[in-house]
Amino acid sequence: MVTTNTSTSTEPLLAVENLRVDFLKSKERPVHAVHSMSFTVQSGECVVILGESGSGKSVTAQALLGLHPVDTTNVTAESMRFCGESLIGPGSTLKSIRGQRMSMVFQDALSALNPVQRVGRQIAEMFMVHRKIGKREADRRAVELMKAVQIPDAERRARNYPHEMSGGMRQRIVIAMALALDPQLLIADEPTTALDVTVQAQILTLLTELRREKGMALLLITHDVGVAAEIADRIIVMYAGVLLEEGTAEQILLDPLHPYTRGLLESVPRPDQDVLPTPIAGGLPDPRDELTGCPFAPRCPLAMQRCRTTIPELTYAQDGRAVACHLVESGLQTKEASHA
Ligand code: SF4
Image 1 (cartoon, rainbow, N blue to C red):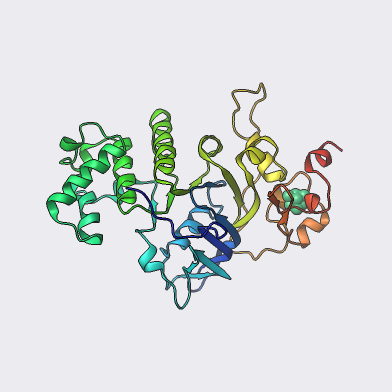
Image 2 (tube, helix red, strand yellow; image 1 turned 45 degrees about the vertical axis):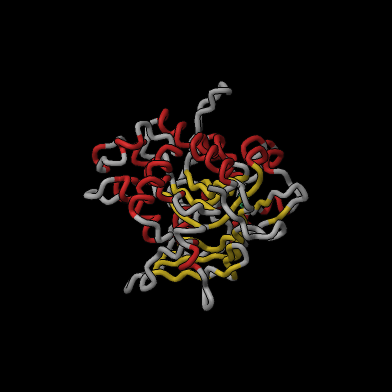
């Protein structure tokens, strides 16, 4: 099964401009979960959105697929396009794209599966419902897909119920379901968080292999720097609903410019370095407050007066990386500034 990519070489597979998501609750101030997110994903690329819990990563992913309840959420964007087709507003083709050309894998495989239906049949139904394929052929394709996600003894395992499988096996079933219709983009929200380290590594390897084999793009959401390092072509660093830094995996992991990215990397243990991890002091700002300056200012060791009153623009450099920080904007490298 080979994915047919209908996007042109110059047009990104996914292009999001100024996405904003607000949660509205009566009698309470709205929660501004995503202030402004603009990013692209190219065909076949693996983009990781990296940030701590509460930074708006999952909210962004769910907004792409229109999964927020319309009565309590306000999702707006200047534009949100998949292969040039709009995902938002009048004329949106999201319904025909969601689950087919763009699908999603969630963190909790158990709640994503029907507990009273055999896993093989759950995969087969994807073919029966969306491709109008008969039961026998759908069952055969389900087993084929289970083999593709490396489930041993797939014919027998297809007759299992979800509770009869391990967490790693269930996550493979969920990935198989997401791949059933040959998506051009797979969105995976913390797909390995609930798994132990060994199984996590197996799932990441599997995602990388499947992506290469099918020419599929992957948008992976994680709080884990190690996961990002393992799989990303490009990394988007998100904090308090704002994109703070974006670049290739090498740029972000080896030469981070934004003080938050540097803090994030310094807060995780590095086996190659003899330094103890240092957590970033403080917490995320109240998401009910409108932004009046840099969202990281209350925790930033380099904050200046201007940082508290002016929101830093995302500045693009020639090497393709983008950073939202007044120090970088004014040509001062944050590393030099921190040692001044
Ligand atoms: Fe720190 Fe100011 Fe840069 Fe924000 S804009 S990261 S507060 S130096």
